[in-house]
Image (cartoon, rainbow, N blue to C red; front, side):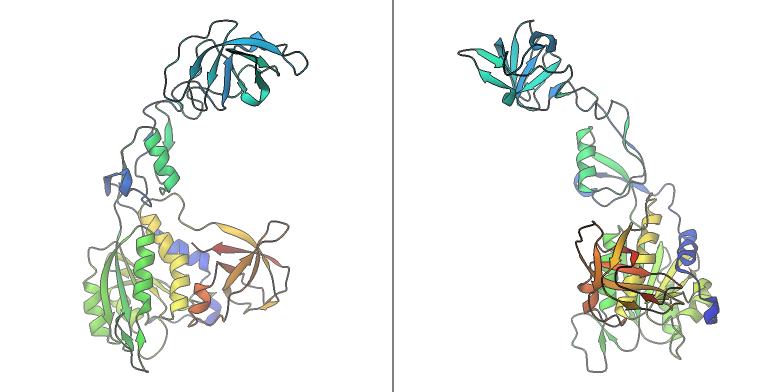
Length: 411
């Protein structure tokens, strides 16, 4: 396995670019899916409006549709009385408003032809049977949602590369889409390595460990839009590892956990070097320094550390972006947010450090980050209690309380 001196540890951002350079979506790998199965998928084609939004001028208030110049002199001291010529409700068709009359309208109701303003109910009062007193002069266009104001017919509502959220599904439905073209789900082989591992559900002996990484990675892959191909557990044997990796041919990405460090029984680097190539190994980060990026044949491969926290953190920084890139997503990295350190911290200056933190609100709007527990890479509890990863950059060994840094909010 290649060896890098500490001075040659690769920066996180460089390693991310190396991996993203290996994963590209297949131009023709798309499918048409109904909206009820489209959440979380990435659009491969734009969604365009089949009709305008809204489809006609309608009211944004409960009140009265008027011609603005009919009550231009209205005020609380000089109210203007006008007869009510009709009632418009949402979903109903209404005709033309005669001059000198008004129509009662509900929110969302079409505005009659000839009307150019809506007067809210609170700016009126009843004036006997069939008449209303107007207490305020409306501006032309007041409280009217104009046809096509939100989106004109034929215009793009959502561009390719958008990962669909529930609100995006609503937008698709609103402009006439019942199905959308999305990228095919990437096929991701997930493999755990280590003689000490036992499957989930088995009772481990004191010297054994439950393979929690496979469960975590399978769930994380599915959340990021991938289809999991479970390769199970492989022991600390180069021959067994070689054979199992051959079973990942045809996949879009291979993700392993364990066996990427420099121990006597860490064979991932050796086998990947034999079967393909190594693009990056050993990063200037903590947790997750012994991470491997390469290819097995022509399949991109990401070798994560075996410690559960390291595996989870490195998947967030590398696995998730790679999966989104495979789907052609326009945004593959989680958004960085400003965080204020809530306690004095000390870290290694030569490593970019990702600390598990809880967040509390502050008066200045910048959340305050405090450690969620122990920070060893084997301590899973502090990750389950964390709301974000606080990033302490390379070159900083101390971050006193009050220091402004950035972090990644965890979903």
